[in-house]
Each structure stands twice: as structure tokens, then as C-alpha cells.
Amino acid sequence: VTAEKAGFDHFMLKEIYEQPKAYRDTMGARLNDTGNRVVLPELTMTEEDIRSIRNVHIVACGTAYHAGLVGKSVIEKLARIPVETDVASEYRYRAPIITKDTLVIVVSQSGETADTLAALREAQRCGARVLAITNVVGSSVAREANDVITTWAGPEIAVASTKAYTSQLIAFYLLGLYMAQVLGTVEDAVVSETITAMQALPEQVEAILEQAEVLKGIAEAVSTHDNLFFIGRGLDYAVAVEGSLKLKEISYIHSEAYAAGELKHGTLALIEEGIPVIALATQEELFEKTVSNIKEVKARGAHVIGVVNDGDVELAKSVDSTFAIPKTLALLTPALAVVPLQLLSYYASLARGNDVDKPRNLAKSVTVE
Ligand code: G6P
Image (cartoon, rainbow, N blue to C red; front, side, top):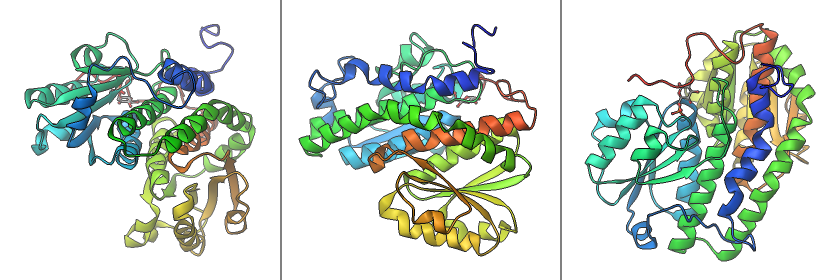
């Protein structure tokens, strides 16, 4: 068993550390030789098919749904096509408007989640083309979808998903760039700049992993609390939602992820003396706005841990501690910002003496609706 874990105490930790490899493998042969274009030879969808897409629906469950929240921003920003992201168990029952010009993207690590599979079938029944992003070759979702982008994360054993999620993000970046190339919605220079930044991500993740001890310290302090908050705006909010789920799943500490600007419309009432607030502030365009939300919680006694970009010394003055992630393009920050949150959850679970890899009541793959 120890051998399977390659010397790590838990599968989750091993899988967190496998992320640089998962990023490299998922990008792999999907970048051209000169590294300035995305190629997706596995797609049966033609360029004409892509040009006929009027709207995109991303459908998934759990952590895969959270990857879909990032995917929405990525596709809208790069390809300028409207995107909606739904949880699969809700999608079919809201009579979604699906036409033959809708691209439905289902995201599933296992490719066996019952709700996701049912959503796929419903989309096809309505005439839509379905593209699957999945980690398991030959899974039900992979077999039934019209197109498949495989995430090459390798087997994920821990119930709490880590490397599958981040590989799904990489798949969305590749797909968004590819659609943009076909549609001409971004300049070639932006495509190659984004690819160059993506190629730096694995080493940047390694740099974060080297800081694991720092996160262990933060996690041990956090683990004594029963409630905490994650806040952020834009892509930081999407990451906050995933960070909050990860923490809840394995540490059993209740947390809530809130869009930072929405706090004052309710949840601010729950901020009391000493409550930890993990504030993500990696999006430069939204930075000032996020800082003012951080001040709102600070003023009510919160203990704020900021996740910031490397070199950002400003925020350190207004929070209790900061964790810096290496600098990348704003669109790519989720692929880095989630990593400290994964480690934080891992160490908080450990500090609470929980079964990290097999949290109570949860299953790795849910094949009932
Ligand atoms: C279960 C797991 C989650 C996972 C979700 C979707 O609930 O506990 O970690 O995100 O299913 O799984 P999938 O295999 O479809 O990505």
C-alpha cells in the first residue's frame, strides 16, 4: 500500500504532487511544435461545426462543476460565445434551451456519474453535440459523447479531487484557445502568449508545493475553528468555491465561499471576532474592489489570510498573513491559486485526525441519481 502511495502518507497528497506531471501530460501533444497554436486532432467537430455554435452549456457535478465555472469564463473570454454552467442534477429538470447549435460540454473525472451521463443523453436527444472532458478512457461518458478531450491526470484514488480538477482546467484552456483560433476572436500573439504562460505552470506549481510547510502551519491554526469563509471576485470566486468544497469534504469544517462583493448583502452578518477568512486577490482588474471587501471583514474582527500574486506587497499591510502564488496571466491563475487551498484542506483534515482519502458519507464516483 505504501508503494502505491509512492512514499506519500495519503493518495490525496500524492495526487496533489502529481499535478505538474498532469499539466504537462494534458497539454502534451496538443501544442504544435513551435508552441504557438493549440491542436486538437482528437476532435471530430470540424471548424465549420465550431463556427455554427451559438451557445455552450457546461454540465457536471461536484468538483468537475467547479472546473466548469472556470471553463465558462475561459470560453466566454477567448471565444466570445455565451456559456452557462449547470450542475447535472438540476440541468435536465429546468427545461434548458438546447438546440443543434448548442455545444454541451460534460465534465467528469470518472466518466460514470449518473447525473452527468443522464444530462449527456438528454442533450443528444435534443440534437446537441456533446463534448466530454474526462479522465477515464473508455468510460460511459467517453463512449457516448460525440467528442472527447481526455485529461491525462492518471488514476485518481482519493475521494477529494485534486489533479483531475486542475487537468480539467488545462483542458478548458486548450479548448478555449482552439475555439478562439478557429473563430479569430483573439490575436495570434495572445494565443502564443497564453500558451507560453501555460507551459510555465508546472514549474510554478512545483514552487507552490515547496511552500507546503507554510500551508501546514496555516491549516493547523484554521483546524481549531468550526466556521470560516472563502471570498474572491471573478475567477477568484470560482476557485474559492472549490477551495471551500475541498475543506468541507475532508476536514468537516463548515465553510462558505462568497463572491466578495456580495458579502455585504447578507453573510457579513456572520463575520465575528477571530473567524478565519481566506481572501483570494489574484485578479488585478478586481484588486482594489477585493481589498475594500477585505477591509469590511477586517473591521469586524476577521482573521484574514490572503492569497495573492508574488510581489504584491500592498495587501500584506491590510491582512493577517499572505500566501503568494507565482505570477501568471489572470485567466490562468485558477490553475495555481487552487493548489495552496488543496494543501490547506489536506493539512486541516490531518490535524483533525480524519480519514483524508476516504471522507465519511462520500463516494469517489456516484452512479445513482
Ligand atoms: C463525487 C465525488 C466528487 C466528484 C463528483 C463528480 O461526488 O465525491 O469528488 O467531483 O462525484 O465526479 P466525476 O467523476 O463525474 O467528476
